[in-house]
Length: 470
Image (cartoon, rainbow, N blue to C red; front, side, top):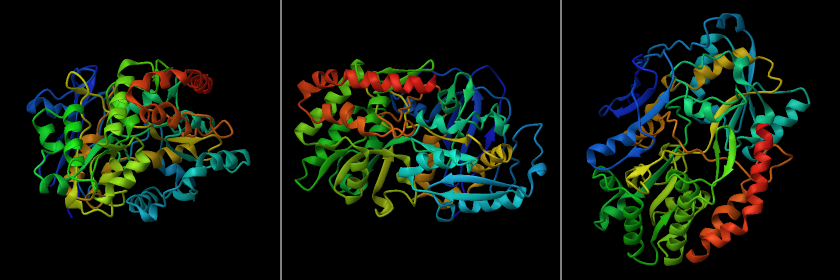
């Protein structure tokens, strides 16, 4: 299969930079960096305006790189870093994903050959990841690179500022939205790149076969017409549920939907966590979900349940992460031709906010080879170094993935790891059951009283999170 062509062009035209992502036909996806103002939300008022779901804002940068399949991309770390100085050294990458089993295997091998830096992969289970990294740090056996998936801000206790990696964070390849979130007291702890192949954005999946066989208007058709909203998504779910008892209308990731509508459970603004459960939008989306569960056109508000239900073939619409577009993703046992996908629906005023959990890469406290780790991160996180054509369930899925994930928007509404924590380091997600699932699974009229009952616990957890930032 022919690889995706990813072109990155820098145009220094103004102070605010917007990233516009467009599908360029069968064999090409183009990522163009340009400068212009962008509104705070993504508009889908009509068919033409719907294309704005593919626009993103904003980075401040002045350099970039251009790459075609098979060409070499220089991994610029910084002007004062000479990669040759780190040849014949070793870095340790702590992760639970064995590169030999995923699309990064050839990338790691190519990096070692190009720079002469050996990559030692320290494999551990995801459930024990942070605890084990911290234990290794304490014993003087620190890895160099930390992989954060839904562990921010607890992971900060295992990290040092990224400065030691000497990365050139002014390059437009770096995702400014993630850097902004992961910068605490002026120090950046996590980085990610625009269009990173490991991104996991929230999105909609639907079962094409169910919609096709029963003549139901699809989410993609509503999206193309500029009418993809919570109302039309609910209509899709109800029409599927009405087909019979074996069918499920929708299985959703409620936390993602709350944040995409402009609400939050626990949010972060101006370097401080705040309580979003008293926000009117948050409560209305919870009431919407509660109504769906009560009436039977929704089956779950948990992404973990949803990602297991959707592959059964009886679920109409699911809110999941973009990992479902990968050949190795959680929909790998479904027929690719049955998997439809599109953006999240808008809530009010025909607008939605891109949303995802916080994922990034950082330097462990005690990293022995931080600059070489920076050289590796610049190479490893650059999508230009991947054979993207073999990573996805279809060419359409590949194109959509980069339209969706090549977004470096300042208005992205991240959600965070929160809860009691394990040894004060890793946040458990048990609180999600209290803050989201419990109110949503009750009567719609009791959603707000149930949320109010948890305010003491929520405020206590927010205090813990803010203590970490201090």
